Length: 280
Image (cartoon, rainbow, N blue to C red; front, side):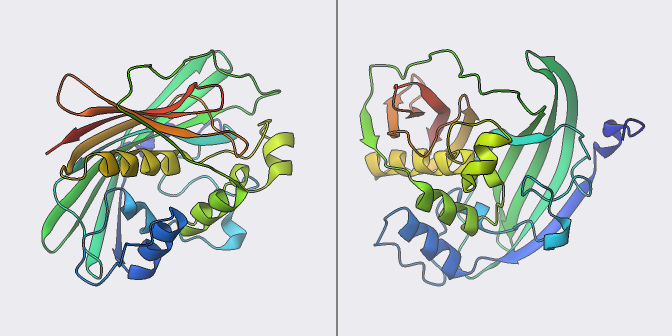
C-alpha cells in the first residue's frame, strides 16, 4: 500500500441512519449497574450513549486479525497494525430520544503522519454530526491514532491524579464488564476480551479497558455528583491504558471555568483518561 496517498481520504463523507431502540440503552444502563433507567419511548438518551448506535456493520469475512474491520472503506487504509481511539470532543445541543430515527454524517477532516518514539504514527480526525428531524443533537470530533506493533509493553511515566478532588469513586472493572461493553458497541477488538491476543500480540499485561467506556464512566460520575446540571460540551484524551486487574477510580474536581476536570485512575493512582466537562 506504499503507493496509496492517505491524503486522498480527506474530505470523504459517510451518512448512516439508525433508530434509537430502547434495548441497547437499557442494556448499557444495567451494565453500569443503573437499575432506575427506564428507557421508555420518548425518554432522553443520556449523553455519549449514541455510541450504542451507528455500529460498524461488517461481515465476519471482512474482520481483520485484531478484530477491527479490515482497513479501507471510509477510513483510510493505514498500514500500521494498532488502532486506538485517542481523544474526542463533543458539543451537546439537545438529547436524542428513545424511539426516534437518527442520522449520523461523518467527514474525514485530517490525516496527519508523524514520527514518535516508537516509530511512525498516523492520526485521523473525523467529524460526526448526529441529529434527527428535531435538528442537530451532537457535534463530535474523533481522533484515531494508528501505531506500529510494539516489541514489549513500556509503561508511561508516572502521572498521578491531582490531590484536590471534589469526589473520587471506586469503579470495579473485570472481563465481564469489558465483554458486555464490547458487545453493546459491536467492538470486536481483541485486546478487550482475548487475553492471549492482548498479551502475546499487542504486548499488553492484561485486558484493556475501552477508552469510550472510561469516557462514559467519567461523565456518568460527574452527572451523579452534579444532579441539577446538564452537560454542554465534553473533551477527553487517553493518557495511559487501564487494565482489567486495575483498581479503577473515577474522579472529579472543579475548574476555573465553572466546569469540571475528570480523571480515571489505575491502582497506582496514575491518570488513565483526562476529560474536561462544561455545563449549561
